[in-house]
Image (cartoon, rainbow, N blue to C red; front, side, top):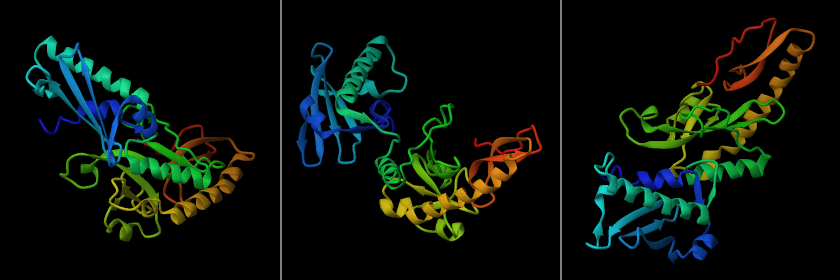
Length: 274
């Protein structure tokens, strides 16, 4: 049951960040770095105790007021009977009301991913793009050079098993280019790149294992942007006077997936991002 306990709250509050002033106005009580709120629902039959921790993670407990014990059927994946579904639905509605009143939408699920996103925006003014409609990739954000539209960073959620075989759970990662990918990937919090060319890129886990400045690898991301900009000259030569199409394929300079012109062809020879 412990593995299911977070599922209701995490589904409702995914990609949401608490606003302290709005939490206080709503009735949350602060104790140190933690916010707590209690609300009854279903005509007082149940009491919800909602907690927001220091990193913005929301947990909750639903108490049966008749027995003053936690209502455990709420956490079953496949509960029997409409009554349990009714309690779950009412609890979810209560949580959605809290999310709307006390939280703001953010691009990514983890606090560290959102901090790094903000750092990139403050440094270069580049906001993440979410180009994939498929549910599995819909929350993956690409950072592109504004002139060339070429990638220099990618934040995406993956299962831990993609990085460490056999490890359970999920984590958001930052894919970024480095000079020595093999050497960098051997360090704590860094792994051979998932989804990108492992010769040039690494995946950095965004679970606060590493400090934000280390994760962002600012100087390396700047180098990637400059490299991608140089690719523009080749693209323009291809465009001028020749039939061409644009496709997403591997950049020869940095190994990333970019929109690069392909001359003298009407077919897409690019390797599209999965």
